[in-house]
Length: 125
Image (cartoon, rainbow, N blue to C red; front, side, top):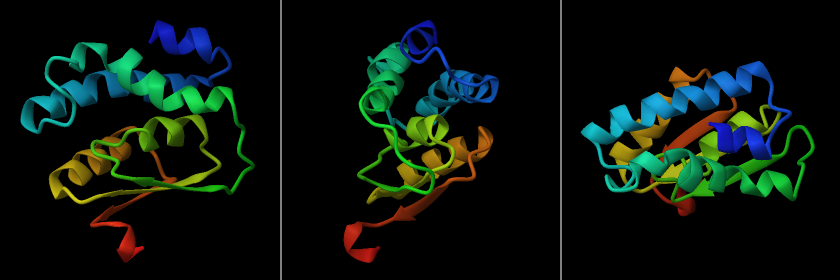
């Protein structure tokens, strides 16, 4: 989490809490359903969350912007970005139902209300 704060020092306490929760939720889910390589789960913050947030160093969307995350897998980059930009909405799509289930559960557990999910592909939007 220190790496996240190094690059995003202005996160709110709520955002810090949500991102911190990801550090326990993803490893728990990953033991049941492989959403991140088991060899890489120890690098969750630097290889997955920070990489997902990196676009936030280059753009600042206006409130109400809608994002589509095709092939979200376990919720990357959609879930970290939904935490970063709570005034935007995110629609996460994946063809693998169990991965959408993981992403949906994680989003609910961290209290995200700006994310929707779809099992399928972009042709069904």
